[in-house]
Image (cartoon, rainbow, N blue to C red; front, top):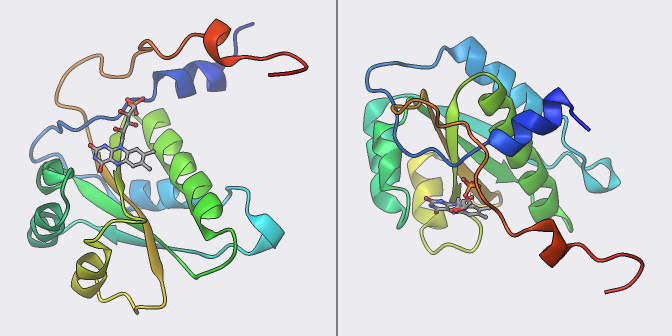
Length: 169
Ligand SMILES: Cc1cc2nc3c(=O)[nH]c(=O)nc-3n(C[C@H](O)[C@H](O)[C@H](O)COP(=O)(O)O)c2cc1C
């Protein structure tokens, strides 16, 4: 069965190489964040807060604080997903993060989810972004127009026959 949305989400990739000097318009970034806030949220908490970062100096600073996100320095923008501490903050904000990745992908913008939650560098990121300490960093999302052509493509994943169980494990 073919469906546009399903085709599109299969083509989402982690894209870490961005076209230099091609900024993402703030309106476009807001549209992407707006998609994030429509994620499902346990108990209707909507615990999320989003920070859009576009300034090069801050992108470089954040990149240097991460362990596997050095490419952030060359991104067109970054969205930091923060949360109030609720029982299901991680699930809620992971769902919001995924919505953001998909919305960006639908607009031809490459993204990569860079770990936030559980990382030792969270506190340093929060200090840099002036986020009050009661908020938890869930993810950093780098965004940019892909440098390489045809980045949005289906790649191999664990096959259905390996992961799908019917009626019982
Ligand atoms: C919770 C989480 C944390 C991740 N952290 C990083 C990271 O710090 N750096 C990075 O380059 N990729 C990170 N990724 C992206 C994964 O490496 C990527 O999703 C995985 O390799 C599968 O590739 P795909 O996204 O292209 O399907 C993270 C993904 C998730 C879900």
